[in-house]
Figure 1 (cartoon, rainbow, N blue to C red):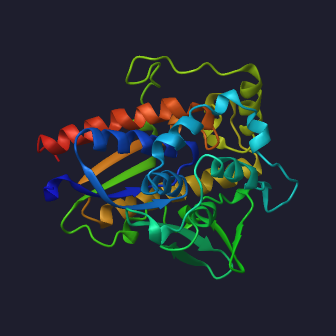
Figure 2: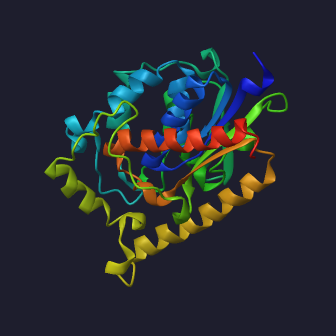
Length: 300
C-alpha cells in the first residue's frame, strides 16, 4: 500500500466527545487508508483499543444503544472524595461485548498513557491487559476513582499528555493523523439530526434529561454562561484545568509535523454525555471528511 495511504493515528482525551474518534476511523477506512499504529489517551485509548482489537463495530453498536438501558446501572456512584464513580460496572458491561485481551497480541500496534499520580510520571502501556490500560488511561480526576494496577494508582493520561503524539513509534514513512476533541468554541458545528444513512438519532428519554441536569453540577462546559455569572469551587477548578489542558493541546500539536488534523470543539458534548454517541460519531465523520478533502486536494 502507498505510504500516503498508511496512517499513524493519535486519538486525544475528551470523555464522550471522544466518540467522534469512531467516525474519523470509519471515514479513513472508507477512503482506503490503512491504520498501521494507534496511540490514544483516555477516551482515545478506549476507541483506539477497540479498533486495534478488531471490535470497533461491536463497541459502536453497544455505545450507540446506551439510551436503551439504565445509565445509572452502569454508574457505580460512591461518596468517596477520590471520585464519585468507581468505574467498574461500565467496564464489566463492556467486557461482555468485547472480551479482554493482551495488548501485545493485537494485530495493530497500540499504546496509551496514564499518570502515576504519586510519582508524578506518565506511564505508557504497550503490553498487558487491554482493559487495565484503558481503565487507567481514562480515570478522570475527581470523577472516576484512580485505577489500581500492579500496586500503583493511575489517573487520566490527559493530565500530562492529552494528545499523545509522543507515543507513536514510527511516523516518518506514514501519514501522521491527529484527532483532538478539546478544541475551541469556534470549531463548534450544529449537531447533525441524522446519521450518514439518513436515519434519525434516537430521542433522549426524560430520565436521561434529568441525569444530564445533575451532571451539570460537575462539568462547567455544560453550563450556559449567560445563566450564571459565577462558578462553584468545583466548577471553577474543573474549568481552570480545561483551560490549561486546551493550551497544552495546542502546544503539543505545534511541536510535531502533523499531516492531518481533525479538531472537535469542547462545546459539542459534555464529558459524560455518552447517550449522544451517534451524534458525536457523525460529527467526527464530518470533520474527517473536511480534513481528508483538504489533504487530498493539497490544501494543507
